Image 1 (cartoon, one colour):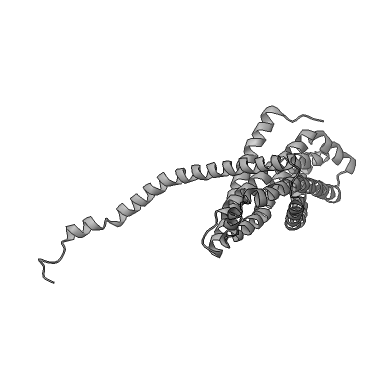
Image 2 (cartoon, rainbow, N blue to C red):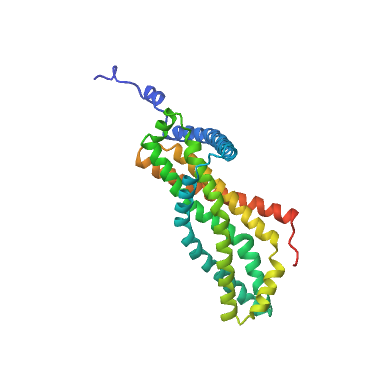
Length: 291
């Protein structure tokens, strides 16, 4: 090929932009596409939540709730969350008692050890532990189950037969998670508080009576109700996020794995944001008072 027939260097530069320009173009596309995709995901999640709640009330009114499926999902979710909840609660309560107990011994206020359990375990530790446990164990179970069904085209087959997968699959899992969430929160509160009592009485030489007195003075029924409410809201968020990712899984086993990973990460982020908002709401309108 002669020099006359060879393409010029200017022509090649026009056909293929430099790497810097490609990087800038890619970053610009990412900046413009990410908010649009996030808004679309939030919209689909909202529509999914509305449909699930609508099916829940319709099935309750018409007395056609699939209780066998709900009980089966409750048992499955309890199997993957009950024992880890107990194992998480004991170190949680013990760590709070150890960390705060040493500081209180230095200032001569060891009798207030129960207040640490009331403020730390009940208000923040228990609902957050329950939420993170559900996002790690329950969300992965729901996303993997629905994702596998979607990859095997079972979801499309159900739609062809006139069965809505939201009513048949998502709604029972939603109700099951809502029911077991308060149980997990109460188990974590009880185990954490008793673990803190054991550490306080055996290590810090705190009298059990003073422990329970300070616990009752600082931990009010409002804190317990807010903790249970947080766990219920966290459960709803976890199921909706995991169900959406599972129903949108594509690409075989790789797609199912990506759906599980995304559901866990998004659930954790949503739980932290929701906990911040609810804690701020509680501090603004339900200020803590000595019992």
